Image 1 (cartoon, helix red, strand yellow):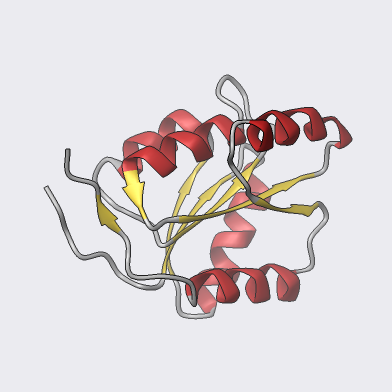
Image 2: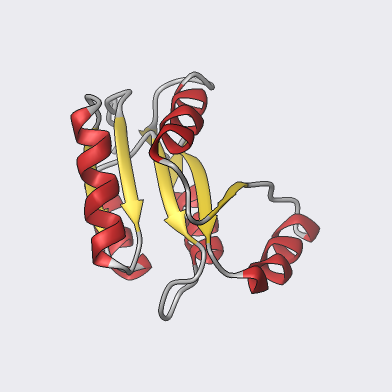
Length: 136
């Protein structure tokens, strides 16, 4: 089922609740419609019914990591842009694996100043057409 999705929808996927909730407040205060998930699995449930324009995803999540979730999101939601962020230096191996498989993601290093995050998301919002569910 295809559905036109809002241009200013952001999904935040971060297992540290304080960080996730703070990001949610910052983006909501700047006019974005947001959803927050504290795991990739919860985020997958959200995107089954609500397609974001941008997903801000922590790389180091419990169970499914953020890069694997970004790949899943790419298959499920056409036109959703992913902004990864991480405070762990060990993510480079995961990023290289994704690159080797032909996937490129923007990544920001934690801690990220809110203005940097807002600017990055604003740039991603300008790319391509609105998000819609893919039809198979």
